[in-house]
Length: 319
Ligand code: SF4
Image (cartoon, rainbow, N blue to C red; front, top):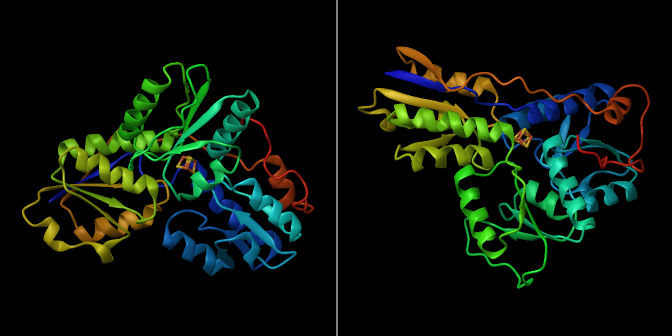
């Protein structure tokens, strides 16, 4: 049996940055450092940072007063920053800059008096953060949806969650454009999601089975699985070799493997070792050279001298 390994796969620049921020925070402030929501949607990464001294909570009001809290890569609504101020927390904001850009777009269009439609998944942490920025309508393309009757003259701007299926999002945007032909449409699906889905399509075209390594609550992992299934190839999302069902491999000679933006490479390697293929071939466009540096305000906070949460937490620039 041969393994075909998607390239690129795994950790994106935003996840790298978020995990770095938690590690640096623990070094700077000592344990415990609280993390609001899973730092990334991967239980093994969460367990790793917790073993270093992080404590994951779902709500800011669970963080003891005066503590240090890291806000996850998915982004947070302004109400979370407000609660942090009230509790005198030191906030280290690990929101991915590409998510912050969507927040800034939403605020800009709102200031311009446009109606905003967000294509995204109900209940996803990123969507909770984005819908908190200003008033907007949410379109979840997996469900029945409708928009209010805004009339023809209203200006509409369409934003998207960063980790959606390119195919399904395009279909939803097409429907919105039928209702509002002049709508401004931003493509907010990020480079990491786009590149991983393109590589997964290639993978599905040359293999008989696709294994996506990652967590069940990872949006971009689920989209990779959907990409393979849409290509007519059976696909499974597993966290590691412990979830590998050997019966899937019966009669298969070519297995495709990929992983989402929240999956560390060691989880992929563990699955390949469990399969023990004769050959491993790489498939896809290749390496990414994207990195995000820690914003200056955050460097100050982690480095010399604490800036308290009453300072502006979420700079309103297009970083
Ligand atoms: S998947 Fe995209 S938006 Fe999300 S953290 Fe990674 S780079 Fe940022």
